[in-house]
Length: 128
Image (cartoon, rainbow, N blue to C red; front, side):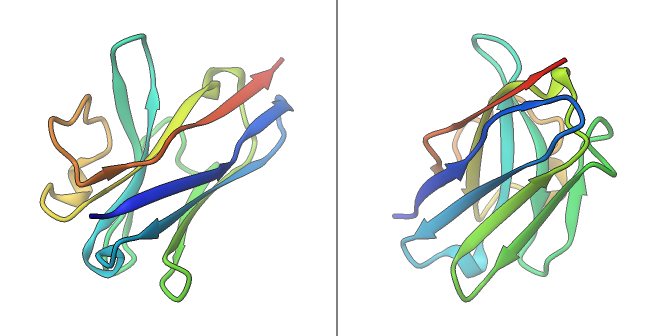
């Protein structure tokens, strides 16, 4: 079973940058869509960005041009570089992996019923 361990996050001022990392173990990294969801309310997570097996990425309109997702297949790790951060980016960010749900449809998806794996969450706080 795939396991995801996140690192990164923290507190920055508006305009600053942060990088999130998500290390996968379990053997399915190479066949999984990877991405990040962020908590938008007490009960809802929404897809922000995803990267498919072939490296193609999909971004939410609100982060396009500011966030960049990448992956290192040798390290089984996905990265989210977040630049020009805004206070509205403040949230808990969760890394996710799944082999079934269409990767390009992750953005805007809320509370997916069953994904293969979730990270523990990384808090990003952006102050104005």
